[in-house]
Amino acid sequence: MSAFADMNIAGTNGSSRSGRVTNAIAMASRRTGVDFEYLLGQAKIESGLNPSARASTSSATGLYQFVDQSWLAVVNDHGAEYGLDWASDAISKGNNGRYYVSDPDLRKQIMDLRNHPETASVMAAEHASDNKTYLEKRLGREAEPADLYMAHFLGVGGAAKFLAANDSTPNAAAASLFPSAARANRSIFFDRQGNARSFADIRANFAAKLDKSVQGASVQYANVPIPSGWSLPEGSKAVQPADYVRIETERLASQVSAVDTNKPQPATARLAYLMLATFGR
Image 1: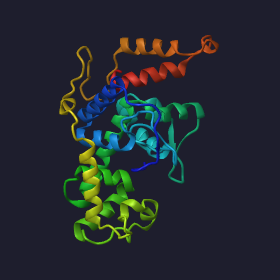
Image 2: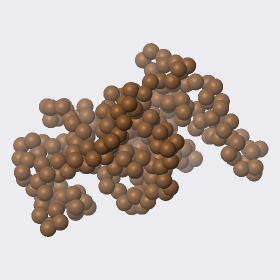
Image 3: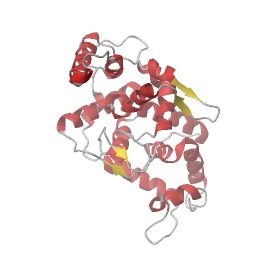
Image 4: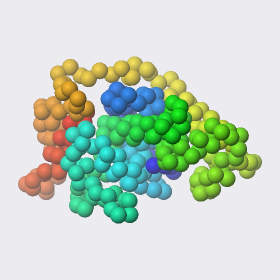
């Protein structure tokens, strides 16, 4: 994922979409225990809460700007927990360490889930939770929101290296330890006069950026309840209301062109199921 991608955002945030997105983030926070304001702030920075956002310089897509490999990795690791076992089962890891899906149509369906607010939010939350566990084990302290965003920016291994250096020598120049990242993100590692920023300065800037992104956000979303009539089996994170699946399947099928109406639509049915199995939307 790219923390400060060159975004090509289409459209504007309508109130209906914005409400759905915020509630999806709140539900993801509730399911995983990851801080709501962190998840909201990250989505605002990455995409402006636009589920259809796409970066012009990479494969980064969706609310959280997952690049292809990061998305396949998190779905592979956590998809089955949310009714996406069909997706995680289709993902393989090559000898080179890269994830792939052999079926091109199935791969497209999996990648398109990045634009589904509920799925993107819960996968981002699980990814942040994994990063939090890793960082706390490496650093011997609690990982704060700025630390999680550093993991989003540098990768969790890079973040652990950065934060360890920050804890020991906060005033040292960070660019010397991360020359490649500094070249690709000069405005983060250097000020306008070209002076190298310290570890402490960069982390403080990340924290300030997150804080600014959630100013004025309503905390009521942090306690969004599961709607009445939905059941949540003990030990399960998935919600699977059959009536909602039927309704959503019919709605999606109605959008298929007349040319395709006589053809079977297993992908549409499967997509409707996974969307609703995740959060019942």
